[in-house]
Length: 348
Image (tube, rainbow, N blue to C red; front, top):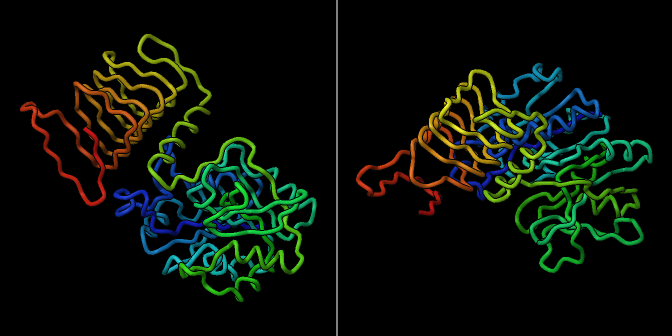
């Protein structure tokens, strides 16, 4: 079996971060979102991977994942010049897949308990495709499956009037027959080759599509709120406990991080390499990246990315996402000075 990690898409809902960074490389608890997806595929024994990259941040993706030797796997890269849909991205990997079964995994999706059970069902029951579904509050944002008598009977992409609350999670176990199906697809009204249309054609051809319901949580990290929620869920799974006068709870502290004796840390938290924390309080559900300097500050329930400096006393920073190389400091004149780019958001 082979793996396809989809790393395309423009990430408009995560602007301004995605003007300069790839949404799937944004860090959650110290790792890019897509690394959790890659790890889930590695855990079922896959060694050969293709990563689909788009016209935003492709070199960043290559620089991070390289040839895969860090994970003892092989990676090749396939370029999708325009965001023409999931089915189109999968079709681009046709020559890589050849005659193998494969799993296609959206790089901005995280599934709590991995995909081993899906893999076992797909292999054991000789399915033509196997899908992961989740109950959602607003199915109109997703591809939706209609199920009757424990069988999928229909699939619709982003329906205006959903007949089901079962959304397709971005994990698809497929056979190479899918490429013939995709080659006959017509673009949808939004100009994309929809994976739901390809799967629906499989159904129409009397192919056997299996499914399972998410056991645990699933997150599509495509919006700031979902991104922060995913950070909380990942941090909740930290196992190591630290307990001393200044540090309490489940906390990961990376190499060469410095926390002075005037600071207090309350887990679950993540603190990256070479980060220095002085006279500050770091409260639960905070992830701080590498090479940051936090001074005279109080932070909770936030993601602070690499190389950020914060020296801000007086008010707690909460439920925030702060991008790399940001600088936040107290203005002694009590004025507010802002330098904000397009699509920035601030609440004072």
